[in-house]
Length: 284
Length: 308
Image (cartoon, rainbow over all chains, first blue to last red; front, top):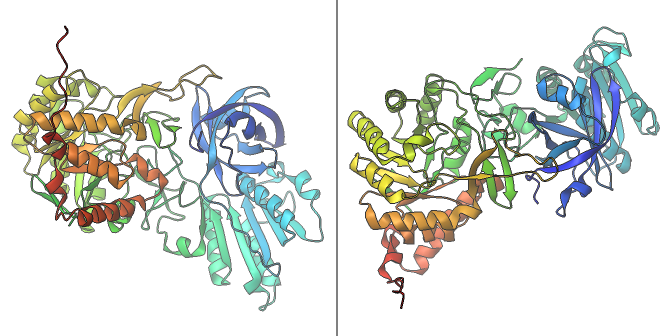
């Protein structure tokens, strides 16, 4: 068994996060027959729904007993099939795949996590790692409207001495009104010039949102780690569908998390992806 | 010292990227060239855009051994021409793998690829999980399509062989008689993986093609057999993940090799293999890999004894 081998296992639990979003829990040690690899926040799995399809999904949590979770928005055929699964149904998992978010060891750093919609999933996983390291962090959760806000209960359980959660909806129906990127820039402006070099930003969400966050980070010289998404078959550096020009980096293997240095040189970033045939097409 | 010349195609390393692996974007190909690969073979390109089979389409079975059924997903030659031009603007030695649904469409795609700048054409008549495999299992069809393309093309023409046949030598000879400038041996071997929990085949297409570690000895055997009957160069392919595997294929009779599956461990393997090959040549006081081509054939092996 390797991380690229499909392991089938029964779903342990399913929770509703918000309208159209569910979290699926499974135990990787049970399904693995040896060769279990401990994942890290930012890594993803290929999720096989038998008879339907196999799609990449970031982990939204994991624990030290091998319980992993993915948080899935019902947006298409495969995610719809995932939503129709029940506790005890089999799913197939390959992973953990790709690279991960990197946390500083320096406790003087202040971390800002900016998520848009279902892009909150890997950031929730990251926030759990940050809690263990006792670093100071702020989460900005962006959503279209209040019904799409997720993980409220998880975030409420956090120790508020170190953390703050800011909700931001496009229509103002929950938390602040505005895009997550705008809320991020307002937050940055509140820091003094001497504090800004200590900020590190982490983001995931629609790529156009990520691109705006990137531009803000460049403007204020804030280091950024962004998790990108592309269509992929193999998830392990073979099919080439997730290649981003002009560096030729593979989202599955060199990513999905890319830092500012790579993002700066990534012409496709915020603009193009490839479809299942390998043809380059504009991002939605 | 690693230079090879296959029917006029001059390469700085005997390592060629195998079709179907990373052969989509010029930028990934450029990374492979910069790390020392000799040439690129593109993903197989057909007359029209094709999504291929749904996922799961590429899975690992054992460490280094993969099963796939991509089903010839590709952007289609008309969309791919700009990519070929981009690739050639970076001076990347390029073999375009082509397929069609008839001899005429094969020819059409091959000519378009050649005109866009391809340095050689490889014809895929052997994908074990698509309808075109029917050409690669028939010596007459193989002869006809090779002859047709060879007549119209000016760049070297390679035929990728389907190993899922009873007598590979007669098909390879048909390609040679049709005018092929070389054969690539071997494509993936037909295989299936059934999940014991869900009790169903894992790949969306059911069966697929086996590649990687497990098929290397089979590839060596096929190259060894073909070397006995062919005059044209053989490009060895199947499960290479070390310099020793490359040497073994040359000893069996290969003039160059293709590498694919092993790249899942990272592109650095190209550099490691090139370094290993140089060390081997230096240690053995050899100037070129050509000096060891087919050397395994000098030894007599024991014949099957008569029954008493």
